[in-house]
Length: 480
Image 1 (cartoon, rainbow, N blue to C red):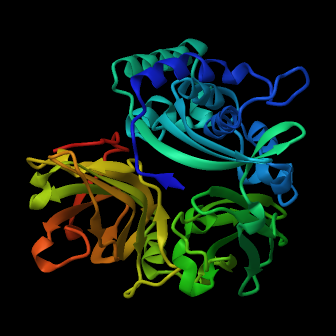
Image 2: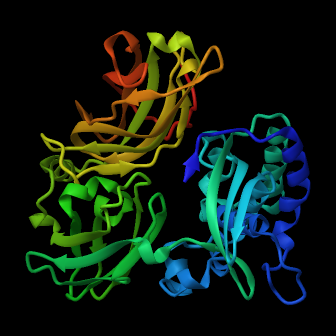
């Protein structure tokens, strides 16, 4: 769906930032009583604005009735929890800085295909996330109204100074015309079915069940699911879950982003708890992928069949987590041929096993997704992850490269062969320390070797460094 990135014109930025998104938050839904019918691309901007600000109620109403037959509003809101309060307020502020331009619209009867060029603030950039406190509701709630206004003022200043991280590109959508007006067609009828199964093992006295038996997921869509668990005994019980994904030969296309299985769970007698799960079907999942089943099994902690290092750390009274930092740098080869070489990294996966196994990866979301290797010269590097992960010995690293866009010094775009296979590299995560993995990319000129494309990108080396952790150090987009 996403086409190669492009930047919209300055004229479009000026016009749309003063018109479309200056009004969107206050406009009623398209097609409501008293409102003139709107063009398909304008309706689409309403929908995308709702997605960006996590206004899930509004987004759902702008989805086609044909899709809504497959997913109720209650299900949609559970899978896409809306932001409220200060988090929504700051997201709406960022949304006023979004600009769109209609590239092309084709209308055939009650169907429309719309291509939009867009330029949006990168809410995942470290500079933005630090400023908005990671959109954390509790942290934002502790800020006074003047402090929240100061954040908005700072965002405006960054935008005017052209220092606010932005993403530019094009996207194509399909809409259908209904009595209430144009609505976005997502084709949930053809979505991938993700089923959830729960079990307890080794006589664990708990009841454990999924709130939803099945979720319809589109490739590239990040969704939330919920399990519930209740202690049926008269004493506290600690347990830990393990998950399996089927079919196993396609499990690499389902990414578990956040999961209760990463931690131990302790329940008091009779206590009931909600356990959230965040997952994503990879955008490049082939058409042969039609369904997944995620099976979770809870074990008493003393019978948990997990990696031994976790139990050793617990017996020693150590912390359960250590810090992992992943850096990217460039080993200078053919990089001097390029004006720009941008890697878009969608996922960082690590695994403990002696051999990589589908479904056994620990998925981590990068804090910086887009890295321009041409900027990483003279020993510079980009920090793409700084996160706590469970302690233990890991043996595999895999970076999922969503795309690689190269532009030669002549201004000509060029296609690049990418190798993103798992890399064997043993490293230890220990409490009180930060383990730093530095991924050294090398870009090779393979024109003389008859390759499919003139350049090939490989991981040359992954080095490991361990430093003492004195606190959660601030994220850095680039460093030396």
